[in-house]
Image (cartoon, rainbow, N blue to C red; front, side, top):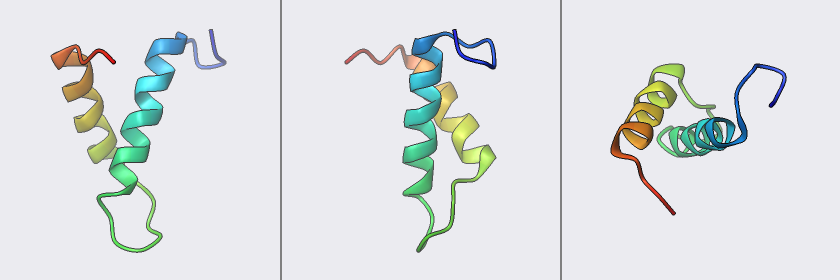
Length: 50
């Protein structure tokens, strides 16, 4: 468990969501929270397994 009380799987999916959201912006702009939340919801709702 990490310091925010999340398990490893949830932490990884948030990381994937943040990285993906960052590619949606021009230049070196960081990710937007709304994009991260949307991507996280899609990933966890669709039960994507790798």
